[in-house]
Image (cartoon, rainbow, N blue to C red):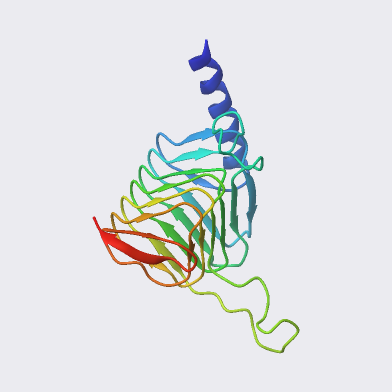
Length: 185
């Protein structure tokens, strides 16, 4: 019975995402309804076997808010590659955010490619946006934040509660605020 209920939830959630203009490939699993904001000329792509958990009951670490998928500017791209997954995570692309194959993003994470406002606040400076790339097989622990311009190398692990402000190399364990390499894996 549980399998039937989860299948029905998945079907309705995927149908809603398609209506919102998302590009869903084969085997996408959606548990709970994520928040979506998408410019008509932006793309949000969920590739084969992607998992989006957006429900408190599906993840006990949930901060109580759904996953949020945002591509808010013309030409913005938010892409989750094959087999990747997020759980009650906010991903906000104004330019480009790519989550690599098999990457897992923990509950309550925030991934953004811009500052949301000019720096310093109130100045004439434009809002800066720089692409974010999370590599293949990366694991990002719960409540972590990944900021604009960051690349996290394939197979790396980011400890829970980390704030990633600069690139992390391939195959390392990193953590802290600011996030630093702890050891090679």
